[in-house]
Image (cartoon, rainbow, N blue to C red; front, side):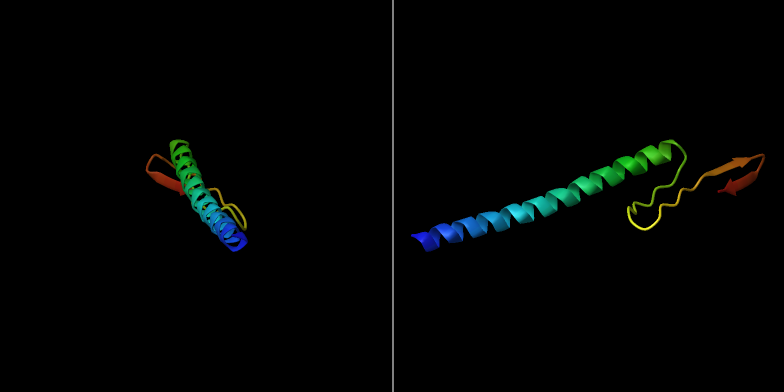
Length: 69
């Protein structure tokens, strides 16, 4: 009986850990999509990287001259 209970607890904990990882990845995908949409509305590019350094790019054009900063 104790072995069965410990097996149940271990499998439940493993299932919960897998669910948390998958749910966290889905949340990151949604946040990346929201950031990408918001950045595009404001005329920016978003690459989805959240580590190292963050680069911001601005693009535009005037009188046939395209620029990027």
